Image (cartoon, rainbow, N blue to C red; front, side):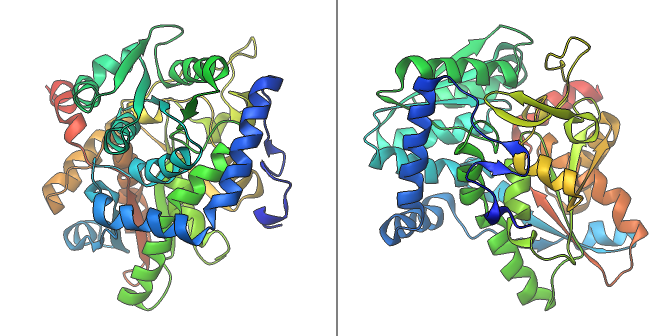
Length: 386
């Protein structure tokens, strides 16, 4: 059953909108506006204009020759989201949503952020479009990603550290949703991942699908055929759903998501409701969202996008975990072999590719989605390696 056949906001049993009535009204209006504009020629033209002239798309699909030789197996290609303006895939979705916010007459934008990349992208777009910007970030993450906090402030955003709970991404989402309930009349919540109540997962996928739209065209130009597998890291799931989108209907292409072993939602999660939607969730003995940890702040989330939950349940996509040690090793290997420093999030995908490629034939092809660059993580890795 293709996802197009489900009722809006659902992927099998997952998704939906479990929110208070006043917020449901706001989200229904948002869904209506999104449906109205997403295929509107003028909206699409403006979106593609900013992707080209501001973000710098299309970005390359780089053949990683040295990494391929090191693995002595499948050909490895890197989809270079790290080359986007602001350094990650997050800006693809931000541009789409901010153009929607503009059409809806919003003057104030709020967002949540984990590693800070979505926060930086949102602050960047708000600066360009002259909108008031507030970013909620876990207090723990503001320490780990102090440089990104300064970037957001430099771009004119107000960064609000959230010390409730673990002081991580989940808690930042809680605060942002609370803000939206109180200020929905003048506020647009620019959600950064493929999570949350409908229509957020559908919207984020729509704007991130540009990743696989390009990579599919690029690999056909370079190799004359589709890849054998596409690999992406998974936290909330936005870069992965974007990297998978145009291959979901291509049964010959394996879709592989890679999680931190200490936040293994898809590997160990059970169906539950979190942040207003149903997905696979890591729960503790009392049935509450379990504390998670990852050296990559952007993957530190106890839930997952509803479509990933569905792809896992149906077996269309495979999800694996890697350890922090494997991630740090991959971070260094890609830097030394290709002169590309990946984000710690992206290093999860690289780490799994380093295991998978040697088991494959030399005429097989892997695409690794390099979701972001590692500048933000260099100091943290330096301390860890020391």
